Image (cartoon, rainbow, N blue to C red; front, top):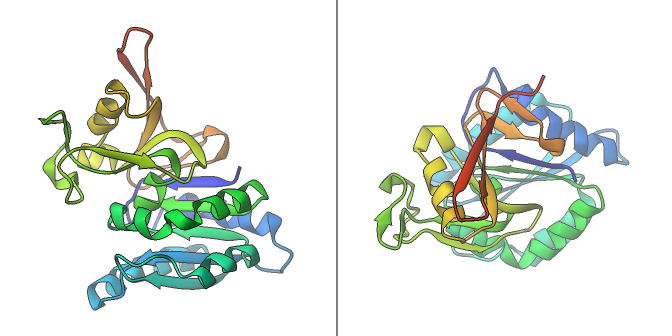
Length: 240
C-alpha cells in the first residue's frame, strides 16, 4: 500500500526526498492533472496555526499538487464531512502534534482510511500521524510497570506507556523521533512487554516508504521479539 511514515524533523533541503514519494504516489492514482491532497492537522489556536505553516512550506517545496487543509480543534472528533472527503482525494497527510488527541479525533475514520488506502489512496503520517498508522499505536507515556523507558519529555501527558488500536496500515507499532528524543528505547520496551508484537522507530527527517525503503537523513530501527522474550534491534539507513 502507498503508506509513507515520517519520523518528524523540518529539513527544507530534504523535503523533496522526504515528501516527494507521497506526492508521486498520489499522482499515480489521481484522475486529475494534479493529485488532490487532504492535510489534517490538530489545533485551531494561534500557536497551532503558526506550527501548521511548517507543513505548508514543506509541501510547497515539493509542489505539483492541490492541497486542502483541515484543522481539527483538540478534543473534537473529525467532522463527518471531512471523512466523506476521503472519497474524493488522492492522498491523506496526517500531521504531528498531540498524539492522544489525533487518535481520539480520527479513530472513527480509521476504517474509512484503511479502505481508501487499500484502494490506492496514498497516506503520509508525520510524527503523530505515523504513530497512529500502525496496528498498535503508541500514543505516549514514558514508564512501563513504573520504570522509565524513555525521556519523560516524550510522555504526551501520559505516565504509563499507552498502546491502543491504530489505523492498521502497517503491522505492529510505530514510534517516532527515535534517535533525537530517545524513543527507540520506548519501542524496545513496548515489544519486550508484549504490548506490540514488533515495531519500527523512525528518526527525524526520515521516511519509511513502501517496500521498506528508507529515505532521508536518518535510520529506521526495527524491534522484533525472540522466542524466549529477548528483543532484537536492527537499523536501516537511506536506500540506494
